[in-house]
Amino acid sequence: MNFLNQIIQGDCEEVLKQFPDNSIDLIFTSPPYADQRKRTYGGIKPNEYVNWFMPKSEQFLRVLKPTGTFILNIKERVVNGERHTYVIELILKMREQGWLWTEEYMWHKKNSYPGKWPNRFRDSWERLLQFNKHKKFNMYQEEVMVPVGDWAQDRLANLSETDKVRDESKVGSGFGKNISNWVGRDIVYPNNVIHMATECNNKNHSAAYPVDLPAWFIKLFTKRDEVILDPFIGSGTTAVAAIELSRSYVGIDISADYCDLSRERTSGIQMQLLNLREKQETYRANGEVELG
Ligand SMILES: C[S@@+](CC[C@H](N)C(=O)[O-])C[C@H]1O[C@@H](n2cnc3c(N)ncnc32)[C@H](O)[C@@H]1O
Image (cartoon, rainbow, N blue to C red; front, top):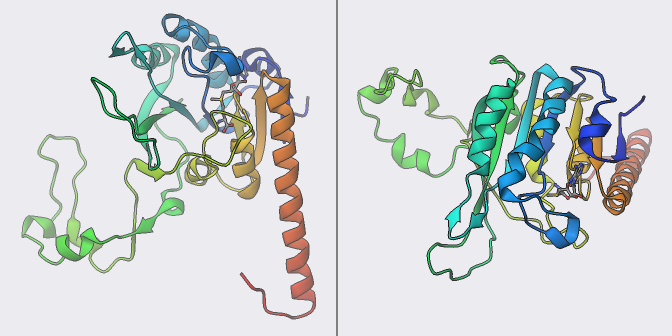
Protein backbone atom coordinates (compact mmCIF):
# COMPACT_ATOMS: atom_id res chain seq x y z
CA MET A 1 0.00 0.00 0.00
CA ASN A 2 1.37 3.40 -0.93
CA PHE A 3 0.39 5.66 1.94
CA LEU A 4 2.75 8.55 1.26
CA ASN A 5 1.20 11.99 0.69
CA GLN A 6 -2.33 10.68 1.22
CA ILE A 7 -5.25 11.65 3.42
CA ILE A 8 -6.86 8.38 4.47
CA GLN A 9 -10.36 8.09 5.93
CA GLY A 10 -10.84 5.69 8.84
CA ASP A 11 -10.10 4.95 12.48
CA CYS A 12 -6.35 5.55 12.79
CA GLU A 13 -5.95 2.38 14.88
CA GLU A 14 -7.30 0.22 12.04
CA VAL A 15 -5.69 2.16 9.19
CA LEU A 16 -2.26 2.02 10.80
CA LYS A 17 -2.38 -1.78 11.09
CA GLN A 18 -1.69 -1.81 7.34
CA PHE A 19 1.47 0.29 7.72
CA PRO A 20 4.92 -1.29 7.95
CA ASP A 21 6.94 -1.16 11.18
CA ASN A 22 9.45 1.68 11.59
CA SER A 23 8.26 3.72 8.62
CA ILE A 24 7.49 7.18 10.09
CA ASP A 25 9.97 9.89 11.16
CA LEU A 26 7.65 12.15 13.17
CA ILE A 27 4.13 11.76 14.53
CA PHE A 28 2.56 15.11 15.31
CA THR A 29 -1.06 15.18 16.38
CA SER A 30 -3.86 16.61 18.45
CA PRO A 31 -6.44 13.92 19.26
CA PRO A 32 -9.98 14.73 20.36
CA TYR A 33 -9.72 15.86 23.96
CA ALA A 34 -11.87 13.94 26.41
CA ASP A 35 -15.59 14.61 26.19
CA GLN A 36 -15.14 17.90 24.36
CA ARG A 37 -16.70 18.93 21.07
CA LYS A 38 -19.17 16.05 21.36
CA ARG A 39 -21.39 17.63 18.79
CA THR A 40 -18.66 18.02 16.17
CA TYR A 41 -16.78 14.74 16.19
CA GLY A 42 -17.70 12.60 19.17
CA GLY A 43 -16.18 12.89 22.61
CA ILE A 44 -14.57 10.20 24.74
CA LYS A 45 -15.47 10.20 28.44
CA PRO A 46 -12.55 11.42 30.57
CA ASN A 47 -12.54 8.18 32.59
CA GLU A 48 -12.35 6.10 29.41
CA TYR A 49 -9.74 8.25 27.65
CA VAL A 50 -6.66 6.19 28.47
CA ASN A 51 -8.27 2.89 27.41
CA TRP A 52 -9.42 4.54 24.19
CA PHE A 53 -5.95 5.88 23.43
CA MET A 54 -3.70 2.94 24.31
CA PRO A 55 -4.39 0.66 21.29
CA LYS A 56 -3.76 3.67 19.06
CA SER A 57 -0.47 4.58 20.71
CA GLU A 58 0.54 0.91 20.34
CA GLN A 59 0.27 1.35 16.57
CA PHE A 60 2.11 4.71 16.76
CA LEU A 61 4.93 2.96 18.62
CA ARG A 62 5.14 0.22 16.00
CA VAL A 63 5.17 2.50 12.92
CA LEU A 64 7.57 5.11 14.34
CA LYS A 65 11.24 4.69 13.39
CA PRO A 66 13.64 4.07 16.30
CA THR A 67 15.12 7.55 15.65
CA GLY A 68 11.70 9.19 15.41
CA THR A 69 9.63 11.37 17.75
CA PHE A 70 5.96 11.51 18.74
CA ILE A 71 4.54 14.90 19.75
CA LEU A 72 1.12 14.80 21.39
CA ASN A 73 -0.80 18.07 21.75
CA ILE A 74 -3.29 17.62 24.57
CA LYS A 75 -4.77 19.35 27.63
CA GLU A 76 -6.75 18.00 30.54
CA ARG A 77 -10.20 19.47 30.97
CA VAL A 78 -11.93 20.53 34.15
CA VAL A 79 -14.42 17.97 35.54
CA ASN A 80 -16.44 18.75 38.66
CA GLY A 81 -14.30 21.71 39.59
CA GLU A 82 -10.89 20.06 39.29
CA ARG A 83 -8.47 19.17 36.51
CA HIS A 84 -9.04 15.59 35.39
CA THR A 85 -5.97 13.37 35.59
CA TYR A 86 -6.33 11.53 32.27
CA VAL A 87 -3.27 13.15 30.72
CA ILE A 88 -1.12 12.20 33.70
CA GLU A 89 -2.53 8.65 33.63
CA LEU A 90 -1.90 8.48 29.90
CA ILE A 91 1.77 9.39 30.34
CA LEU A 92 2.21 6.64 32.95
CA LYS A 93 0.46 4.03 30.76
CA MET A 94 2.46 5.03 27.69
CA ARG A 95 5.68 4.56 29.64
CA GLU A 96 4.49 1.04 30.52
CA GLN A 97 3.77 0.51 26.83
CA GLY A 98 7.42 1.19 26.01
CA TRP A 99 7.57 4.93 25.31
CA LEU A 100 10.08 7.28 26.87
CA TRP A 101 8.49 10.54 28.03
CA THR A 102 11.39 12.67 26.88
CA GLU A 103 10.13 16.22 27.24
CA GLU A 104 7.14 18.48 27.63
CA TYR A 105 6.80 21.67 25.58
CA MET A 106 4.24 24.27 26.42
CA TRP A 107 2.22 26.08 23.77
CA HIS A 108 1.36 29.50 25.16
CA LYS A 109 -1.74 30.62 23.26
CA LYS A 110 -1.03 34.32 22.95
CA ASN A 111 -4.58 35.32 21.98
CA SER A 112 -6.76 33.27 24.34
CA TYR A 113 -10.12 34.84 25.15
CA PRO A 114 -10.36 36.91 28.30
CA GLY A 115 -12.99 35.70 30.75
CA LYS A 116 -13.98 35.32 34.38
CA TRP A 117 -14.29 32.00 36.20
CA PRO A 118 -15.05 31.68 39.92
CA ASN A 119 -12.08 29.51 40.85
CA ARG A 120 -9.46 29.77 38.09
CA PHE A 121 -8.07 32.09 35.44
CA ARG A 122 -8.37 31.78 31.70
CA ASP A 123 -6.68 28.78 30.13
CA SER A 124 -3.82 30.02 27.97
CA TRP A 125 -1.61 27.01 27.37
CA GLU A 126 -1.61 23.45 26.13
CA ARG A 127 0.81 20.58 26.51
CA LEU A 128 2.98 19.21 23.73
CA LEU A 129 4.24 15.95 25.16
CA GLN A 130 7.31 14.45 23.51
CA PHE A 131 7.65 10.66 23.44
CA ASN A 132 10.46 8.59 21.94
CA LYS A 133 11.35 4.95 21.47
CA HIS A 134 15.00 5.46 22.38
CA LYS A 135 17.14 8.02 24.16
CA LYS A 136 18.99 8.76 20.92
CA PHE A 137 16.62 10.31 18.41
CA ASN A 138 17.08 12.73 15.50
CA MET A 139 17.02 16.39 16.53
CA TYR A 140 18.21 19.41 14.52
CA GLN A 141 18.36 22.17 17.12
CA GLU A 142 20.02 24.70 14.79
CA GLU A 143 16.84 24.77 12.70
CA VAL A 144 14.80 26.53 15.39
CA MET A 145 17.30 29.05 16.77
CA VAL A 146 15.87 32.43 17.78
CA PRO A 147 17.20 36.01 18.10
CA VAL A 148 19.02 36.40 21.42
CA GLY A 149 16.46 38.96 22.68
CA ASP A 150 16.64 41.93 25.02
CA TRP A 151 17.58 39.99 28.14
CA ALA A 152 21.10 39.58 26.76
CA GLN A 153 21.92 43.29 27.02
CA ASP A 154 21.48 43.34 30.82
CA ARG A 155 22.39 39.77 31.70
CA LEU A 156 25.50 39.44 29.56
CA ALA A 157 26.79 42.95 30.31
CA ASN A 158 27.43 42.11 33.97
CA LEU A 159 28.95 38.65 34.09
CA SER A 160 29.93 37.29 37.49
CA GLU A 161 32.97 35.02 38.00
CA THR A 162 30.75 31.90 38.02
CA ASP A 163 29.22 33.02 34.72
CA LYS A 164 32.65 32.77 33.12
CA VAL A 165 33.26 29.11 33.97
CA ARG A 166 30.99 26.13 33.45
CA ASP A 167 28.56 26.40 36.35
CA GLU A 168 27.55 22.83 37.18
CA SER A 169 23.93 22.47 38.17
CA LYS A 170 23.52 22.68 41.95
CA VAL A 171 20.87 19.96 41.87
CA GLY A 172 23.11 17.55 40.00
CA SER A 173 20.94 17.53 36.88
CA GLY A 174 24.01 17.69 34.64
CA PHE A 175 22.61 20.81 32.95
CA GLY A 176 25.62 23.02 33.67
CA LYS A 177 25.99 26.32 31.83
CA ASN A 178 28.74 28.76 30.89
CA ILE A 179 26.84 31.98 30.23
CA SER A 180 29.87 33.82 28.80
CA ASN A 181 29.72 31.46 25.78
CA TRP A 182 26.73 33.45 24.59
CA VAL A 183 28.32 36.93 24.61
CA GLY A 184 28.23 38.46 21.13
CA ARG A 185 25.86 35.89 19.68
CA ASP A 186 22.84 37.03 17.69
CA ILE A 187 20.90 33.80 17.83
CA VAL A 188 20.48 31.23 20.58
CA TYR A 189 18.59 27.99 21.16
CA PRO A 190 14.97 28.55 22.16
CA ASN A 191 13.39 27.39 25.42
CA ASN A 192 10.56 24.88 25.70
CA VAL A 193 7.72 27.42 25.74
CA ILE A 194 6.29 28.20 22.32
CA HIS A 195 4.40 31.48 22.03
CA MET A 196 1.90 31.32 19.17
CA ALA A 197 -1.59 32.65 18.60
CA THR A 198 -4.41 30.14 18.09
CA GLU A 199 -5.84 29.66 14.63
CA CYS A 200 -8.74 32.05 14.04
CA ASN A 201 -9.04 31.86 10.25
CA ASN A 202 -9.91 28.17 9.94
CA LYS A 203 -13.69 28.38 10.04
CA ASN A 204 -14.19 24.77 8.93
CA HIS A 205 -12.65 22.95 11.89
CA SER A 206 -13.30 23.92 15.48
CA ALA A 207 -9.98 22.66 16.84
CA ALA A 208 -7.35 23.56 14.27
CA TYR A 209 -3.91 24.66 15.46
CA PRO A 210 -1.78 27.17 13.53
CA VAL A 211 0.46 25.80 10.73
CA ASP A 212 3.48 27.27 12.53
CA LEU A 213 3.00 24.84 15.44
CA PRO A 214 3.61 21.54 13.56
CA ALA A 215 6.12 23.42 11.35
CA TRP A 216 8.32 24.20 14.38
CA PHE A 217 8.49 20.52 15.40
CA ILE A 218 8.88 19.28 11.82
CA LYS A 219 11.98 21.49 11.45
CA LEU A 220 13.30 20.37 14.82
CA PHE A 221 12.89 16.61 14.36
CA THR A 222 13.02 15.87 10.62
CA LYS A 223 14.90 16.56 7.42
CA ARG A 224 13.66 17.17 3.87
CA ASP A 225 11.73 14.23 2.33
CA GLU A 226 11.17 12.49 5.67
CA VAL A 227 7.68 11.30 6.61
CA ILE A 228 5.29 13.05 9.02
CA LEU A 229 2.15 11.24 10.27
CA ASP A 230 -0.89 12.93 11.77
CA PRO A 231 -3.38 10.19 12.77
CA PHE A 232 -6.06 12.78 13.73
CA ILE A 233 -5.50 15.16 10.79
CA GLY A 234 -8.71 17.25 11.12
CA SER A 235 -8.46 20.11 8.64
CA GLY A 236 -5.04 19.03 7.36
CA THR A 237 -2.83 21.54 9.19
CA THR A 238 0.06 19.13 9.85
CA ALA A 239 0.07 18.05 6.19
CA VAL A 240 0.15 21.68 5.02
CA ALA A 241 3.18 22.32 7.25
CA ALA A 242 4.89 19.17 5.92
CA ILE A 243 4.32 20.18 2.28
CA GLU A 244 5.60 23.73 2.89
CA LEU A 245 8.77 22.24 4.38
CA SER A 246 9.27 19.67 1.56
CA ARG A 247 8.49 16.65 3.74
CA SER A 248 6.13 13.78 2.94
CA TYR A 249 2.96 13.39 4.98
CA VAL A 250 0.25 10.89 5.89
CA GLY A 251 -3.00 12.13 7.37
CA ILE A 252 -5.81 10.01 8.83
CA ASP A 253 -9.23 11.13 10.03
CA ILE A 254 -12.37 9.22 10.92
CA SER A 255 -14.57 11.93 9.39
CA ALA A 256 -15.07 11.88 5.63
CA ASP A 257 -15.83 15.62 5.68
CA TYR A 258 -12.58 16.47 7.42
CA CYS A 259 -10.69 14.24 4.98
CA ASP A 260 -12.24 16.19 2.09
CA LEU A 261 -11.29 19.45 3.78
CA SER A 262 -7.71 18.23 4.32
CA ARG A 263 -7.42 17.13 0.69
CA GLU A 264 -8.68 20.54 -0.46
CA ARG A 265 -6.10 22.32 1.70
CA THR A 266 -3.19 20.07 0.69
CA SER A 267 -3.89 20.32 -3.04
CA GLY A 268 -4.36 24.09 -2.65
CA ILE A 269 -0.96 24.51 -1.02
CA GLN A 270 0.68 22.20 -3.56
CA MET A 271 -0.71 24.37 -6.39
CA GLN A 272 0.56 27.53 -4.71
CA LEU A 273 4.05 26.07 -4.31
CA LEU A 274 4.06 24.83 -7.91
CA ASN A 275 3.09 28.29 -9.20
CA LEU A 276 5.77 29.89 -7.04
CA ARG A 277 8.44 27.50 -8.35
CA GLU A 278 7.37 28.09 -11.95
CA LYS A 279 7.64 31.84 -11.41
CA GLN A 280 11.11 31.44 -9.89
CA GLU A 281 12.19 29.30 -12.86
CA THR A 282 10.98 31.98 -15.27
CA TYR A 283 12.86 34.67 -13.33
CA ARG A 284 16.01 32.59 -13.43
CA ALA A 285 15.64 31.77 -17.12
CA ASN A 286 15.25 35.48 -17.93
CA GLY A 287 18.18 36.41 -15.71
CA GLU A 288 15.93 38.65 -13.59
CA VAL A 289 16.39 39.36 -9.90
CA GLU A 290 13.87 37.53 -7.70
CA LEU A 291 11.68 39.67 -5.49
CA GLY A 292 10.79 38.28 -2.04
C1 LIG B 1 -8.49 17.97 17.63
S1 LIG B 1 -9.00 17.48 16.05
C2 LIG B 1 -7.57 17.70 15.05
C3 LIG B 1 -7.44 19.10 14.53
C4 LIG B 1 -6.24 19.31 13.63
N1 LIG B 1 -5.00 19.35 14.41
C5 LIG B 1 -6.35 20.59 12.79
O1 LIG B 1 -5.45 21.46 12.88
O2 LIG B 1 -7.33 20.74 12.07
C6 LIG B 1 -9.15 15.75 16.19
C7 LIG B 1 -9.61 15.01 14.95
O3 LIG B 1 -9.57 13.61 15.23
C8 LIG B 1 -10.58 12.98 14.44
N2 LIG B 1 -10.80 11.62 15.04
C9 LIG B 1 -11.52 11.29 16.14
N3 LIG B 1 -11.40 9.97 16.40
C10 LIG B 1 -10.58 9.45 15.44
C11 LIG B 1 -10.04 8.15 15.18
N4 LIG B 1 -10.35 7.13 15.95
N5 LIG B 1 -9.21 8.00 14.12
C12 LIG B 1 -8.90 9.05 13.32
N6 LIG B 1 -9.39 10.31 13.51
C13 LIG B 1 -10.21 10.51 14.56
C14 LIG B 1 -11.74 13.94 14.48
O4 LIG B 1 -12.61 13.75 13.39
C15 LIG B 1 -11.03 15.31 14.47
O5 LIG B 1 -10.99 15.87 13.17
